[in-house]
Image 1: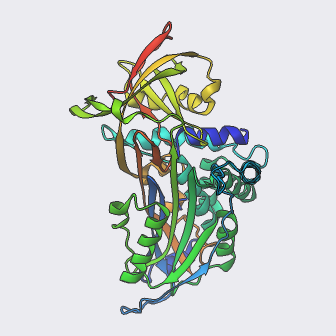
Image 2: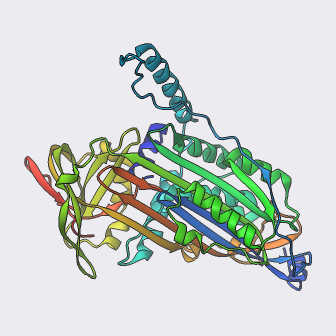
Length: 464
């Protein structure tokens, strides 16, 4: 997949998880846990993964609450998008504006200039995980960020080895760790944008207990490849809990405070990872607030009154045998696609149909489309959901990390046996007349038709 296709695809849905006799001996010692959290936001995605381990060292019941930063990555510096350069006399300074525009274009081009084929495998990961995790939502609104979970699993692969790592890389669609590092770095950079008009901020971190003997090379790798900060402190202390909560809230714009408040390390925790995504962009054509009015949304549990935004203009209308769709262009950041299953087609059925993911990754290249007038009726919404990834990851082939007998976390620490015991993914997305704030662009299931209209269509998203 070309870089521009991945960027567009991410924008559309826009917008880590982390040997015999020796383990038998280790299990006789005191148990500890590793939390690997992956949070993404604005709405953000917060993925907390809990790992249980057997430690090879003892632990004091009373600890001091001190913490320090071990590694601090250097984020890309981007020139701001140029606004009108007005002189003191109220005239446009075209030379200054041109220079600012050139600097902005150069930095954007640099972020998008990634190795050919770097996104290969991402589409397959996307196609596998969307139906797996969103279908678990049932009748509850589901939000899922493939980009966030992808980056989280990439980081988890750095902490594992052997078959544990192989299973993760298989799900990610890569064959070796060096290829994975190249792809992860390229996807991170092509997705990152912070130039004043569009925010697509990816952040990662590692949280270590004071007593853990970590592998410094791995921490350096996480900083260099994944822009991951690393910290060391007293697990179980209120101060260290506050640090990780503050870090996630800061990276996600405080949009997941309720979920983040539940993230705590107990005294058995020795290691944690956190990965976040924050996205915010405006519509290219904003909705007029005067056109917003209350209407009825037909939910599975009953009708709901909510505010619907309205917009009528000429745009692409897409269809397939099971759904129809329209897109809403976002300034400088791709499009948000609204996808509605046809009458009689359930969300679960649509999620299992490969035409859905094929459409998401083809977008404007989709063959069945018509450029017509669309009368769009779109409900304003603010949706947060939490997904337990444990069973889903195992169903997708990532099993060894959940079993102490088979897990291999030797790249993280040489003196501790580790296994994955919990994985939680929480995400939020909100839209209004101005634009979208989200961890990723979310695919919305809604109303539509299975055949193209003649000249005009009312596209009303008043049902799932």
